[in-house]
Image (cartoon, rainbow, N blue to C red; front, side, top):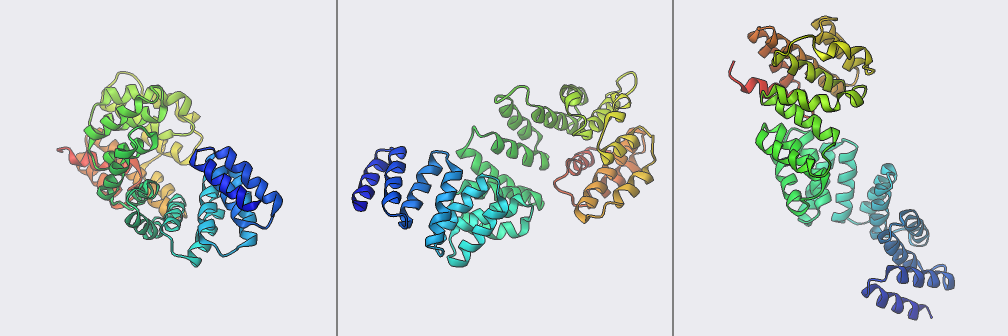
Length: 355
């Protein structure tokens, strides 16, 4: 009977009848609860049907019967990752790789490590995964993210462009492409990618903010103001940087009246972002801002805050007409090597202009 049910399931699978396969495997399990392959097959079809929790439960049972099967750890790691259990997925990937060095498991572990921002370790796995399977776009995308985080922007661009060729209508892929182009000061390419994203949703606040940054970077202050003002009110508490950039664009454009930041700074909840905005309004001094950045205990965050501090101090000095001191501070922002911070790129863009 079990053999007949497996054969029927195979016939149904060829016809694309996943629900039928699930039903047959359920019958097998009812007749023979210790049949591990039935749990694995049912997990496969359930994952395809979007029943991720049920699929994971099936794999739990499988591994209680056959605990040394790398292929099953591979599948459960993927399910756990999709369900947001990154620690459990990483544990499965490690256990599976202890049993068998599978490129798929390397890809999963690399993607997880990248998501956890352990990018140097992630690249070790992702390089192997992509070399083994050129069409593993999930691993290639994560590799691009790790390259970008580590400042290897040209390599990141190559990965994102390759993924975008196969997934031209995927929002996060095109967004990543716009991001890496911006980091490389390819502003025409950035605008092209952002306009593609606008086709998804004209009211997308994140795209409007990035358009604002890009217009600001090329010196189009009026369009930067227009883009940033579209999203400022609903997003201010979460992103004081939008308000800070609006202030700089407002002054650069020589708009009449007081900068909008003056009426917004008290609404900013983030203490560090508020300090930056207060420095821009001369409510606190430059040295005080740098000291607050240096007070951050986490080395990576401290470098990032110093990058932000040096950039906004430098931009303020440039606006005041002190080009030498302003450019010196922009250079210090770049010397922090805080590649992932927008201020790092803005500093490069400002320094690329003629004094």
